[in-house]
Length: 414
Image (tube, rainbow, N blue to C red; front, side, top):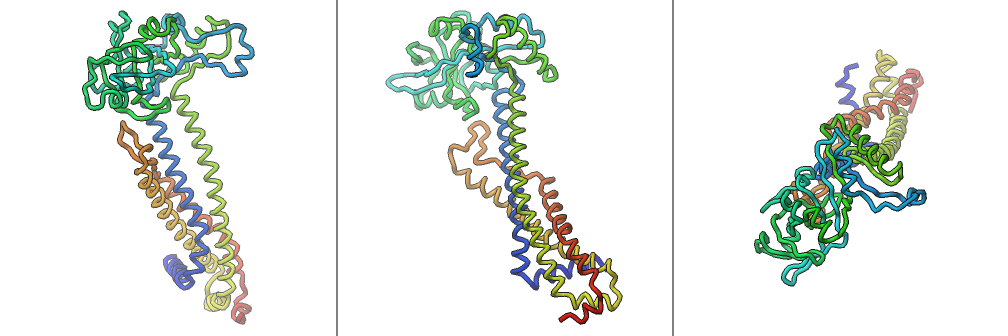
């Protein structure tokens, strides 16, 4: 039997029974469109997460003292946290690190200027912090070595801090008050938007020594960002840092030494598991659609029993009848699959378009708006082929039943 003739016959049967065919394909359409939408949104989310980590510096190691409740129960003595002596020891003993940048967050920071005030994310930093953390300057300069050595009362502010305190005025050279300390603005950061660490445009960077000597009165470093000599030595560099801390604190628990790329991999693994779970749920819709196809094909066999008898009487072989019904079921599911791909892709981009009008979903640095979506071509092809395969799988039994009909009994069928 000619393949194209079998396909045209299948399409003719679909047109002849539009409502029944449409209801039969509904399960396939829902399943495929759900898979496409889910993958498009999760792939977009994965790309955005990767972009967010790139903003933070994906090749960095984060060192912080943050014991859990369970770890606190076994602590033999109290530790305030990471100190500058620890940073010096790590710098001296870790040969696989090429640069270090301690950061001391200031909790509950408040900035004032000429009757205007705002809450800010104030942090004590060192020169080079801007390069390591992908911090860009739009105006003025960043913290310098001279600022660090002289405990200089200077700061670099984010765009929201500038807008809320100075409105449209130039802030460079003007003094603001942060938690009671007067600081001269020497730079303004490039607009960056929100990251996993909060609103970057509310940041105020102050020389670390200024925070330690003039605000806190201690040598606390808070957190440490370290950059390995290359990505290939990331794990070995983390091990070096870990061994230094364990030697200094007698294996006391509570220290965290992790890399941003490791955190990114963990998040992507969670997204992959979520994709698998959602894909399984969507697969149930495909399964239901496949069962619907089998039921309809069984009805079709009954309706066309006399036709099958005529075909066999004029020389059609069992193989021809089998192939014809398999092609018809595959065509039914294939058309449903194509429709599902179109519906899923269109729905994903419709969601993206609608969410572009939500201000909180705007990436200030890249200008990207809305929920990010990405439809991989292999997923589209795979979904279509899988839906066609569902039709073949669930069409096997009806096709075998049709091919085994006795031509004499089939011709007698009314």
